[in-house]
Length: 428
Image (cartoon, rainbow, N blue to C red; front, side, top):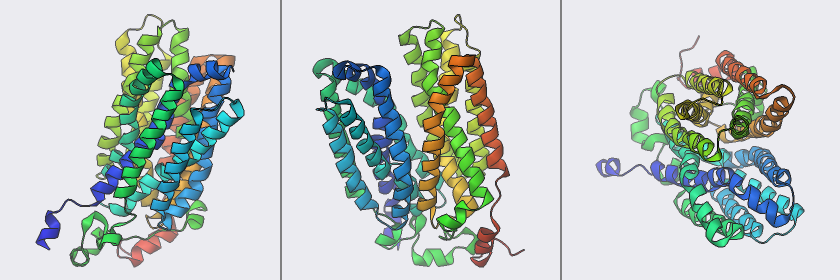
């Protein structure tokens, strides 16, 4: 007993594996895409907008497949999912290095998007839920930080390869990074603590039985079909999609807006770089905070930070100082990093952790398709017709509405009854 307590809880090695998955899939694929835009448009001799469409294909494929992946995670098939992700992500990037056709280029990004779903949030957040109870938010925050760390280091590394060996070599580098990191993750990952004779947080069966019923990490909850029919999850999914719509819509249009205001490219890139840096800090700190206060409040704090940051961006003038732009980048990054830890914990509090993987996978798919994919073109279209300030004001309204929807979402009666039966809450 004493010897077991002295060991590092294996759940933290699982967190490391999930961190590597996030770095290699979500981080590397999303944050490096803009680097390939110009050189690939020149290589394939097509407009930049045609190359940019690959990003939407990636997002849609990742979102659609995440619903399936989440269901498979709930059945304990994590290792198989990551192995498939290695093949699709590694192979897709390798194929991108040799393709000379735009349709094949799109097909490769579809493969990469599917591969990212097999190693992305539907998998990683579910692992945190299975291995942790008291520190679930912190674990989720550390895992999500993988994307921010990637945003800090990967672009400069890939840019160096592009300058020295060309864009095709950079895709091969992507492939190598993905294969190595995901194989390490595959070696480390275990689906649940019960596989090694433990319970969440590293508790033994004896320690679990000695814990008061209200404080025990009990796996109960609604099924995906039950949960998605409740008003609570309908509101959460709308709020989550609305957050993605505003967040991605503003972030991807910010550079063009600042360029129109005559800021030079180096200044814009430098200021917007703070989004990734502050986002990394945010995921860990607010993940830790979500373990201590109601995650609904943490979610609302994130939305308010995004709202204030977008206001700063909206009222940026050509003569605004560099510090003004940096304040936008820092606040937007802080707000952007919160959802990854807060939303999973909100879902768990509302409908339970038992079938979290299946529920989270579908919720993430709804966000990706209805929020992320629609946000960029919609905000761009509004900006074309009414100006960027009007477009950003629409995003501000969306952030506010998203926060309100999360606040009003109430725990379903069916889950309350489950908690009462398990001794988690007092019977009414």
